Length: 462
Image (cartoon, rainbow, N blue to C red; front, side, top):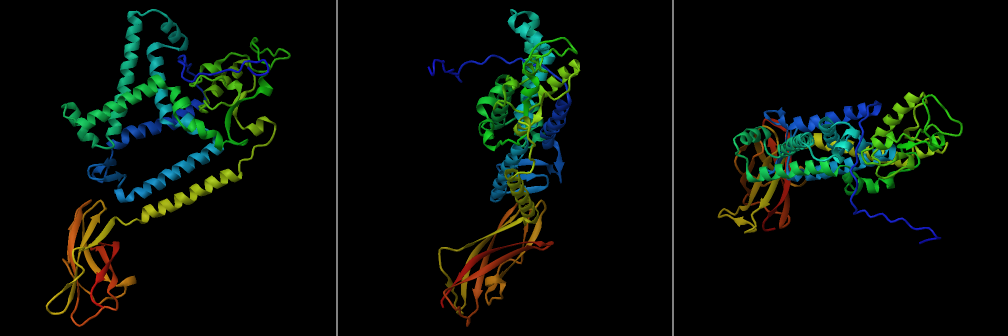
């Protein structure tokens, strides 16, 4: 108790009532279709496409090769992945500062798949009012048939989702052939089942619970909001006080909100946007399209619920360019530029030199000094190459050391070759110090620009 008033307590573990959403059409829902469907189709079709005779996107874990649109990445390239994730995070921060949770409302996989499941539900069980009446009614043959059809279609969508996801890690065409003959491997079956049921549960049953309780983005997004962030908001100055009325009527003392609650009925997270900004809001704009349709019927101006900012609602002028947004945007542009430069200038070749650790050096009968090495060459290109090897002193200077190795090494795409190498200091020559730095250079004979180097040390008597 506080000041005689009871403090409300909310139990987050209590069972939430089912949200029956109402379908609505409108300008922003057409934008959601244009943004969500290309991503969905890209996800489903990309593993079926070929690039240079290979699956366009394939994360080949057993071979430790990651093929992405003609580029092959190796575990050594994981810093690029970390860099890409940092760029994605900063991009999300910049978008959130500018336009709030538009990612959640328009392109988040949870939102896209949930929308598909809701469409299937309406297709099988009817409109919002029909679904509510049917759920309250006792079980009948018609009700059982409709619900069985709905869950069957849900599982079909979930299976396609899970099968496609595994197809990014196992060649999907071969996997489809083996699926028909029941020859899938244990891990393929296990992961397909996992992602099938995960999709079915998330999009079919959890739905808004993922956005409200599970997704961390809903929790920390408020840190990035400011008074100029674009949000979906109800205009209380124009809408209050609420009240029902006849069409075209404008009763004195009432605002434009007719209290139809259509904005609540269409909300996928079940909130009332008229209560102000709430972290559950995913800015999907369903309430905007619903309210605009009511305003059109009432012959009122649109925009009672709209994309706006807190500063604009307070009567001020929104500032688009502000320090935080400019900082994020600048960081993203710089990182994207450096990432693109690194990606397109990376050499598809890697060289590693291991000196024989069992002995420091060998002294031959003729007085020459020998060091043994193992030079590993990794062809990271999509086609085979023939490589030549040579050695220089520090900084590329000439050296008196003589290289004894095969003249060339042939390697196929993604192949690793190890070349035994002997460096010889001719008799009569002496080192200025017990150990000198040497550089091993490997270059593709048929592609002179493909070149890599690695350092090692030559040991001998001073």
